[in-house]
Each structure stands twice: as C-alpha cells, then as structure tokens.
Image (cartoon, rainbow, N blue to C red; front, side, top):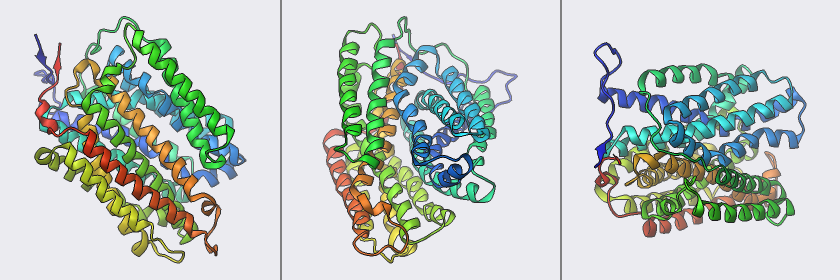
Amino acid sequence: MTDTITIQPPSATDTAPGPELRRWWILASLGIAQSMLIIDVTVLNVALPSIGDALRLDRAGLTWIATAYTLFFGSLLLLGGRLSDAFGRRRTFLVGLGLFTAASLSSGLAPDGTILLASRIAQGIGAALLSPAALSIVTTTFDGSERTRALAVWAALSGAGAAVGVVLGGVLTTGIGWQWIFFINVPIGLAVIVAVMRLVPAAPPPARIRYLDVPGALAATATMAFLLYGLIGSGDSGWTSISVIGPIGLAAAAAAIFIRLERGALSPLVRLDLLARGPLRGALPVTLTATALLAGSFFLASLYLQRVIGLSAIEAGLAFLPAALGIIVGAQAGAHALDALGPRSVGAFALLVSAIGARLLAEVPIGGDAVGDVIPGLSILALGLGAALVTANASAFVGVTDDDAGMTSGAVSTTHELGFALGVSVISTVAGASLAGHAGFAGGGIAGYQAGFMVAALVALIGAGLAFHLLPRERPMLAGRLFAH
C-alpha cells in the first residue's frame, strides 16, 4: 500500500499562505539559505588580503581560512543527508542553519586567526547539515513538472551564488569592512529560521532508522576529507607532490573501507544500489562536470580580470553579473526543455553550449578588456551550465522514495562540493605560473590562462558525451509523484 506524499493544509486559524503558494514560499526560504552556503565559498576570495592585514596571517594561514569551510562542508554532506532521514529534515535543517548563523557571527567578531579558523569549520559543519536537508525538503514538497521547475530555481540560485559571492565580497570589503561578509549572514539566517518554522510543518523522521551507520559515516568523512585536502593542495604543490599524492592515496583506502562497510551495514549511510541505478549513475557525473567547470572557470576569469586587465575587486565582481544572469536563464530554459526533450538531449546540448563559451575564453589576449574578451564567453558558458545543473538535479531524483530523499540529496550535494574543489585545483594547476603574474606582466604568461580555458572546453565536451550516454531519455515528470511505503 502506498500513500502519496502531500503538503499538510493549514488549519482554520492558520493565516499563512494556502498550500499552493506555501510551497513556493518554502522554496524561496530554502533557496536563500542554500545561496548563503554557495556564496560563502567565493565571497572570501577578494577579502583575503584585508583579513590577512587585520589578523596578521601569512599565506598558509589565509589558505586554511579559505579552505576549511569547503573541507568540512564537503566531507560531512553524506552524513548530513542521512541524519536528515534519521532525525527529520526540518529539524536537521534548523540545527544546521542555527549553527551556520552563529558561526558567521563568530567569524565576523574573530580577534585572531585561530578563532576565525574554528568559526569557519563550524560554518562548514552547519552547511553540511543544512544543504542536504533543504534539498530533500524541496524534492518532497513538489512533484511532477512542478518539481522540475522548483529544481530549476534551485540550480539557478546555487549556480548564480558563486558569481554573486565575488560581487558581494568586493562591495562589502571595499565599503564597510571584511567582517560584513560574515555579519550579513546573521539577519538573513534568523529570518529564514523564522520562515521555515512557520511554513514547513513538523513531521516525524521519514526513514525508520534503528541503527545509525557511524563506522560508515567516519569512513565517508575520511574519504572526502583526504580527497578534498589533496585536491585543494594541488594548486600550490602540483599533482606529483607527496602532499597531494599522500592524501589522495589515503582517500582511496578510506573509500575501499567505506564500500566494504556499506555492503554489510544494517542501515547503510549510502545504499550502493542507489548510487548504481540509472538516473543517479548519470546525474552525478554530469553534476561533477558542471560544478567543476563553474568553479574553475570563474576562478580563472576572476584572476584574469584583476591581474591581467587590472580591474578592482568591485569592477571584477560586476563583470560576473551577466554570467549570474546566464545561469538563471539557462536553468529556466533547461527546465522547460526537459518536458519536451528529456534529460539526455538537454544535458548534452547544454554542455556543448558551455564548451563554446569556454573556447571563446581560451582566446583571451594579454591586453584584453572585460566587455569584449571575457563577458561574452563567460555568459555563454554560464548559460549552458545553468541548463546542465537543473538537468542533473532533476534526473537524480527520478523515482527516489521519501525514505531515500535525504540520502540522495547528500550524494548530490557532496558531488557539488567535490566539483568545486576539483575544478579550481585542476584549472589552477594547468594555468601554472601565469597565476603568479600581475597586471602588466610580459612574455608568454597569458598562455597559462588560455590553456586553462581550453582544458575547460575539452572537459565540457567530455561532459556532453557523458550526458548523452548516461542520462535517461525519459522526462523527469514521467516519474510522477513520490511515494512512501
């Protein structure tokens, strides 16, 4: 016997919006929270020099301030997704957002690098609880074609957040001080907590989990932590360094232990058959490709705009606004195209569009300008990535039951964070010594930027092939409603 999952209607005394409007208010509230998490990945970049001067941090200290958040965010996402299944999505979301908001306040008030580092770690832990819980709430709140449109909004907010972070970091740091890149999260976080408590009904945990897979959680966390540590370090040390090979080797060993544990677990952290099934098997590689392209290309374009062209942090940030718009437009166009063409065609075409944008960027000259040499290619790249991300997200949740929504959300969110780390590390390694240059450098230094964007174009082409061969032909809406057993 199956029961269709529905949204509880408000009581007679409830003055909140009706069920139809309530769903979209829920999406808006959760989307704002998710955007904060993504913005916090990039907002720090342009503020690092100011933070270093204020707290007397060297290059190594600043590197850890920048990467600690991503490291803990990415490595704990699978556990966060399973906790939302075990203890309830709403409860896990509120705990995660509360921790993230408190840690943001602590980051802004930090008197030294040690406190700031601890606060950034706490932000990452809160984000790892918040993100999969939020995504699973979205996927169980909407169904059919509405779910596809909701995931389009989700993908647009997540993708555009990377560009908005660059803009916001420049404006706040230059205007009222670096502390406000953290303080701004506090009122937004408190407002979202109130909204979610008002809009999302309390419910028992969706999954009957008698045994929490602690050994599996530790192995999964170790796998992601070692892998992200190695990927993040490759930008400075190179791929052949022992400081990179060692952690990646440990990640492989931890992954093998994780797989063995999950095969025998009473209530596994991740069901291996869920990862191997058709839709998720295709959605995760496309998600990894799209997020790696987004992070790597934005990283390289930001450096080109500031170090080669000589733009200020604010000017460079504003140059990313067309790309943010491109992600939003691409996500909406991709959602509409999914209903007619299906994930396979849309995903492959979207990444082909991104390849064209990256190829245009590979022509950046040493004496270029933002309007003529960067914005067109970056906008086309972002347009394709917006469509690719919504296609992957919609495909990942086809046929997922209510009990597995948190687990699937954790897998998707983990892939996002892995893509961000992989994209920046690979493209910074390819660009090499060019990234150490400054405005006005001469010689062949521009070749590194061109090579980085050319690699991005090749990765997009490979991603298009993966999308065509791995994504399902069927439209996501054909999966119908989610069912609980």
